[in-house]
Image 1 (cartoon, rainbow, N blue to C red):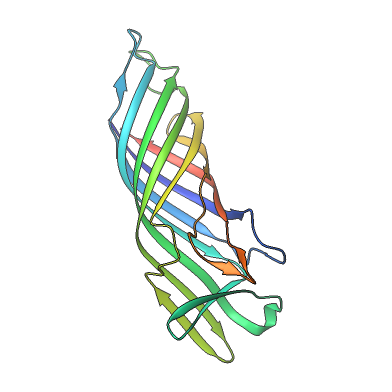
Image 2: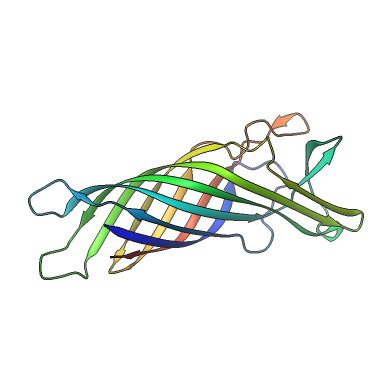
Length: 195
């Protein structure tokens, strides 16, 4: 059984024309995995888990409202706003297939974990600050409540490289100029396993 803590640099993929990442977008995750070996040597295992994941995205997709309805725009002039980001908090259900080079005597070992993760959105907040005023939106109905994706972590000892790729869009119904906003998450960072 293991607790985990992860930190990531967050990117958006499949973005609209004119998109750019602003500043450094970060993510943070914590959780617990139940390790269940499936062979005699105990170096192969499956591990279901439960966790929390917070992701922040600083970029140039402005989210404002008109009559209470979210409106999306690619912000082409970076001097026209001082801050633009959205943040999301998820409950995660990861399921990993694990390989490790451990023995009964050695607890520092190489490992490779591949997994699939379901994430349920419990809170979101977008902030757009400009000289014309601020727009702060919470619980945006255009965000997908259920996300899923694959991930891989590999390393030696407690610290491991980590990459996650979302397989469905962060948005379910948002559009920019009549085109569906179909952006997906790519998170790259480190994950630490704690026995």
